[in-house]
Length: 480
Image 1 (tube, rainbow, N blue to C red):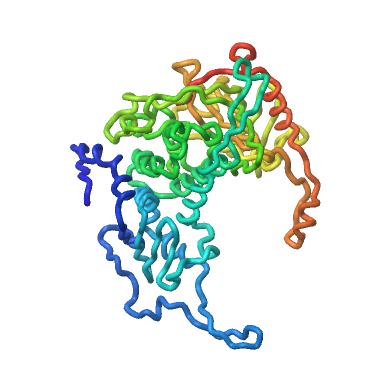
Image 2 (cartoon, rainbow, N blue to C red; image 1 turned 90 degrees about the vertical axis):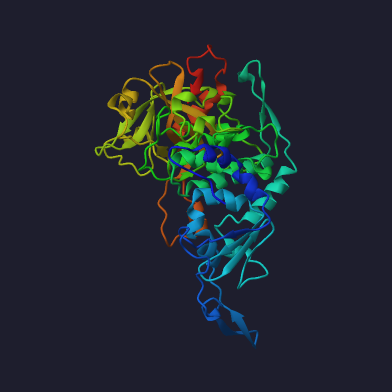
């Protein structure tokens, strides 16, 4: 089975790319050359001798009785399947996730994967869960999502500062857990390799539209995210800061809006899920989204369409706090300052020698901002901050962290912005120095220090009116 991808005629690819998920989802059995690096390599890597695959046996004395046991590599599944060359490819991610049954040909043996179990030739009755650690195994993920989908009672919470809409609907603990599963999927997918960066959202389309992830019919898929969790997911962070974020209108290389994790060509991570019985109230509200941001079609993200033919955006009502940047002597961003309150937050590990330490909040913060050398001087972070066009958008706070994104005002339209990065501020941290010989109890008894700047910021947000026009900090903006 092959999709034609001629450089001068992509019509077959345009027609078939968004239907491939149906092929794999409805197949009876997928045979996967999992350990092959490309199409020129064979399925059969295993040595002709079974001795190289069969685990060794040893004799143990158990309660006075001699027993023979097999010695199995605890990382066997990952070595044979998870870390194999094929599964590092983004298009294969969709195929594996959607297929009901996959027969994997690994380096030394055949593996089995379906919606109920995983197995290897040496473990034909199933791979024990401890041997699946770190692999996000498909069977347990699907089982967990099905169980969680059975109960989706949302929480109603009142807030007198919301004006006319005094009650907001918050996700239930089960929905929060579903959000976390979806984020793990995206994190795994972001590690995969892709020949054409503009295919990233299209190759993820089948996963997003799978039945298990679309239990809520009203939950709209939008450029790699879902509307029910969008305000939380906007806090995504880059793992490899060496790769710059593209600007929102970067034609013809444009392939995703700036607010989507798919705009970054590298691995991403989401803040740790707030798994509590009391989900956090968001500080921002998504009020509108563009009509078809790869929800049901691919017009905006076609390989040959230019970015100018469509703009994927979200409209947000949020607090908009002007930022200044603090630079190191090497030209790196060491911290941020919220101008209105003169509050400074430093990146964890930043050199504080040149700063007044008594005014610095540096308790495990993470500032995901970096200068993009490909951007013109007038669009650089330094110039944006100096001209008053760089802002912090608070998103939500958990028990441990305050999460926000950083946006820049685009010069041609006053209330149009693009995402530039994210900020995670620790609300509490241990101030003592731990030692390798220290016990867990001793470590937990180290003194804790509250982040006063973050605490004040949250208090200000929660007590302020969220009526546009009543305060200079609350706005409705468009992020592209």
